[in-house]
Length: 264
Image (cartoon, rainbow, N blue to C red; front, side, top):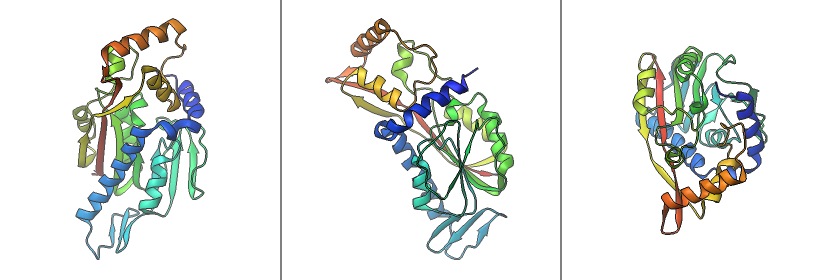
């Protein structure tokens, strides 16, 4: 069982530094926006009126969503990108931790997305770099399916089995990441998959200490309850330096997975 209170506490402490260090997470949010833009660029017709009751409305000058629900909004990286790029009539954002500085038009609902009630008749559910923390991702997809309006969309990112591979190689505790194939199998009954992508993004740092600092600043160190001792940190830094140094730089691998789906 994951300690949800600890996860919330660590992320709450990280919001002030999150966006400064969340380089990859920002890139992931950008990629989600591009996926959505590309979908409508291909599928929308100039005079199309609507798709589904309470669903998506096409406009000549863009796309309008009647009701957006974001799971795991965090510092608002994806939130702001959605509001800038799309006409969102109603925007509800959720996070397990207290958040700050969301746009004024956003309605914030604090809570654990796995146990809380979702809004009804959602036009699109979006989530970036969040669902990998869930105990039961399959149950989350089922609940999202029920909350979506007819023909409602779901746009999410998670992380695959190669995420933070360097840490796993050194025996550091990590999440039980699911592969793209495993996620696709989970959603096949309830959703039509419109787009599915996977990436490997390598971020380079000047030292292993900088890597630890970056993970702490983005709340990614939210699993272990007991802080590392000084000797444990020194041992980790030495091992990391021996195994993952290239031309004086130190690698950290991210394995984002993207899914864009429509409710069946």
